Image 1: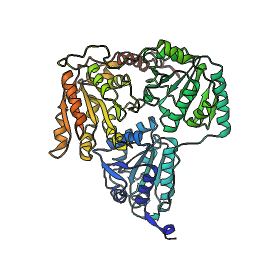
Image 2: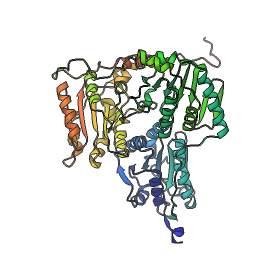
Image 3: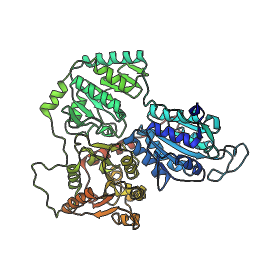
Length: 577
């Protein structure tokens, strides 16, 4: 009987529900509207607060945490904090990652009383932050009345997990410490469920299309990220016995040591032979595929809609038909039981396989240890240290293209923010990813100097909380990826003493290690030292600004063409004269 009457504060209720949803750490920046809420969250000994340097970084860290943990959370203050975090939450939406963006709100009576409140717009209207977040979340919730708090909190968390998108939750500051009934134990659903009729019809139609094809190919897309969807996709691949490719944002979501894995598909910059393999198939099923300008290299990929089977998280699109209310993992699992083996594309792959060019040097003499570093020599060394207890994160830029060419050993994880492509993501995401990893993981982050300058402060948070990634800082004096799309003086930046920043962030009390390597031998030694170091390590490597992958050059030129398409003229034209 006593448990039925147990009560706790709104903030404690939120903390328990976050814990039940799988959160172990949350990322925060304090402000007067969230201080009482933070006090209440700190009462939960099973949640650790990670104080970040700014709200944007806290959002990126929560996004990285969601990648490794399945769900992430951040806590900011109203308006000046929430609006600073907005881009990171929008990126989590683009990347389909469940993040709980929590904001302290103003006093619940302020608007009714006509009070002008600091941090806001100087006007008596205060719902604008929730309204803005509604555009970049699966749901934007606000707790304005105490009695609503338990229901709203539960609905927000379940929405994030079922939709695999971020949600926004605003809690007015004068409600955070007030008492509500304590939460009972519960299990949050982490996926949507299928309509049985729609599922059966979609599976029957897709099975018929695949049975009538002679050379089907499977392509993994980034929305196959949920573990149950990846497992179902693997079962379908083995049932069909066909060749399997992956879109760049799905790298690592299908085992790269599997004999059916062909490589990455993204139009003309695909892995060798993969574009021909996919585009010549008579049916291709994209599971969780996202056909954007980036993933199709400026829409130059040759995808025929009449051969495309597109399985999305909640619907299936087949030539001439669409089936809504069909969950991706349910569809893939059921389809695997219906399709006959169709190994023609696998046999073609086996007979004509071209090894994906990686940065290994099999059969090649070792490079001179005194030779200046190139991107090839840097990534060759990174390839050599990847294993089943490592994860590789690559920042937007040439690190994308070089990282995508690495061959992942079994168990090695890979992350790329491909759809949003927001520079500065990787540094704080590395912090979150390592903290969220359920097993000990050595995280290696490949970051360009331009991107690093946006969010470098979060290295100090790594020092503070004992996170131990290896950051390889590619110093090529600017925004190389932008230069390959459209060059100009705006792509050059001020140089920093990147390795020297570690001493600044340590301030005499941390374990951060800053190294600089300019030659092949120096970089080998630096990586080996970093692997043995008990703390975060940043290795600065100077690279010639003109040293970039050929894939970036071709991709950049095609994206530039797509960006510069002439506008369609609509409406009335003004006559001259």
